[in-house]
Image (cartoon, rainbow, N blue to C red; front, side, top):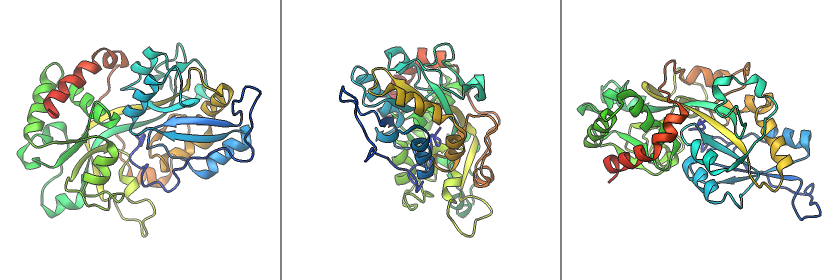
Length: 359
């Protein structure tokens, strides 16, 4: 949600990422509030097709204005800081690694979205209060450049343990866990795998093995990764923290379609992410916001996500497109972590990680 994907790794290459603003059908009530525009605050990876957003307008009369706030971490931080004067009506893109902070800060108002009955309970992490609505899932994983490794006659890494081996020295770029949800997800994968102080020892080894840390997914994938179409492959890192659903991005629109994507996924490095949306407390257009939350769980929007944001829909029974299933990787046993454990330890883990990986 991701990602995939989010939320995903596809956002910068999706040709249909857009922001619709109110035009002639906009209107105001007596208080001066725009009643025909719904403002969606989100991260840079949000994307939706024109057709789907037009369908939302057709069904509800509302148009969508999209405000992007950088990476997911930055977007959530800004929402917390501006909670008394929210930037919009709905926030999309907070995930299970960051969820406790906006919930504790009172960023979201309660609303039970229509369509939740089609969403597995496992994804409904705030089911008692319905302050957020699950929208998509994805797996944060290390991606690798197939050609680079083939040319070097080097087997790509398959696990976290592989990444600290001398053969992979200076090959990996990851995102800042303090500001980026993929970066934080990757950190949590190491905590889940190595536990206690073991994860700290792991990061000491990873630092010694030349891991590079950058601010955001966009910078890691598009600027530093050798196989990114979005960055035209000008980076020098053949390993990058991204998503299991990133490989389809690299073949979307390519003719003829290759037998496999130019990028692969190290399946033993993954962390399961779920993305949520919520009605912002004090929203100028709460009714429009509720309508948008309902629509995010609709068949139309959920079918649209795999090839616009390259994430997995949460609505049961949603058919996935062939390109998404053929070239994406299905992760059977990703690392996971209870939200309560993340909430209790996240700040200290990130602080310790920063001292080990950045400073």
